[in-house]
Structure formats: C-alpha cells, structure tokens
Length: 148
Image (cartoon, rainbow, N blue to C red; front, side, top):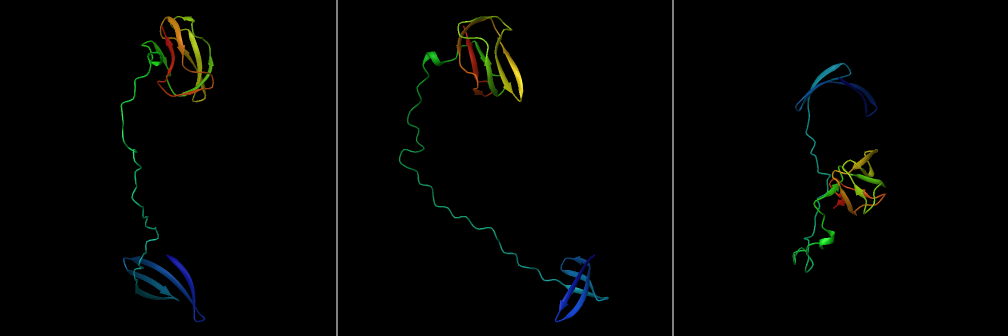
C-alpha cells in the first residue's frame, strides 16, 4: 500500500492506494474508500529515428582484381616448425640460428596469462630460422622457430 499527501486548492488530503488491477484502483482518501478508473497514458517514443544515406562505393572498391602471388620460398615455413602453444609475449630467446638442438632443449621463454612458459624443442635438428624477437606479442599457432 502506498501513501500520498496532496494539497489541492489549500485543502490537504491523505491518500492510500490499496490496490491497482488493470485500469481500476481502490484508494482511500481521508478515511473514505473509493473505486477509481485509471486512464492510460499515451507513451511517445523518445528514441530518435536514424536516417542514413545510401553508401556510395568509389570506383574500384570491393573488387578483387587478382589472386595474390604465393610467398617466396624462403618465407614459407618448413614442416619442422615450433609454434606458439598459446597467445603471449616473447620474454627471452635462449637458442639462436644455427644451434643444434635435441628434443626437450629450451628454445625460448614466453609469458602468457602472467606466467612464464618454457618453449622446448619437439624434435632434434638445427635451428634454421627464428621468426620472433624478445618483446614481440604472438598469437596461438604462430610460428616461432623453424628447424632443419
């Protein structure tokens, strides 16, 4: 039950709203009960209507001209690659190009989710190319190191 105090033309009224069902309310004014009909308020939209102009494409936009040329052979990853197991940042490179590594050797340290992770060699081989540097951010499955 809600209680209100109204002053109308200098007269004070104490109003208690007992119940509201649909458009009917039962109220008590200064101790006397009344059944009152409620009028629905017409709601107006306050959200502005957005009007946009049609998008005009410039000549040559959204047109695929030719297939991209394949990467030079020196940039293609070899079958023996060490990939990032999860996204993170390279903290320190331990191995360098030309080093001979065995399975389980420490290659680099990367930070991910506020933890340092040792990246180990998955195979025996010689480091052909290191594709990252200290401080670089990498995504999961980015190639870190290529082995021969």
